Image (cartoon, rainbow, N blue to C red; front, top):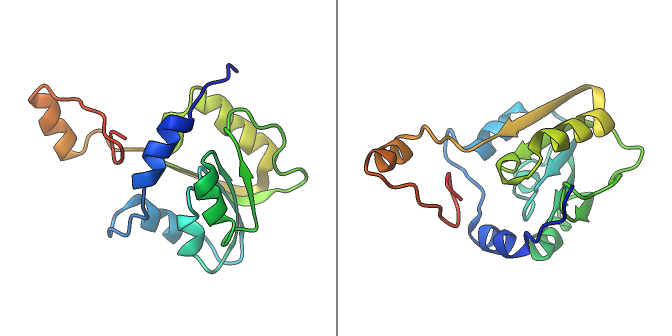
Length: 159
């Protein structure tokens, strides 16, 4: 896979990204799917939002942003800093009960290849993968499309 410089976009994105506590927000929905006492790999874990709000599991994470990873280390068992598409064997010998891709796959150059790699190498036999993706069918996006607007922003559905 070709190397890419994602640090600038990462810093813009991470500076505004926060835990989504909305009733039907992705973070709350993801946490509601986790069973107790499980080993969880949070890919693109940011500052450790999911682990902060789930005291019932052991979290590991991968994060590209150094500052966010430093904050997540206070909560997670282990954080690997790097581009998820470039890492080779970040958690040798560990199998996870849950692997979470929360709003991260849409930012990758090779999302399917990355997803397959982690499922084949790190998901326990009875494990589950949780994926959340932005909802481009959201009413506000559809209205803007009708008005001819498709502007990217620092954070949110078009982030």
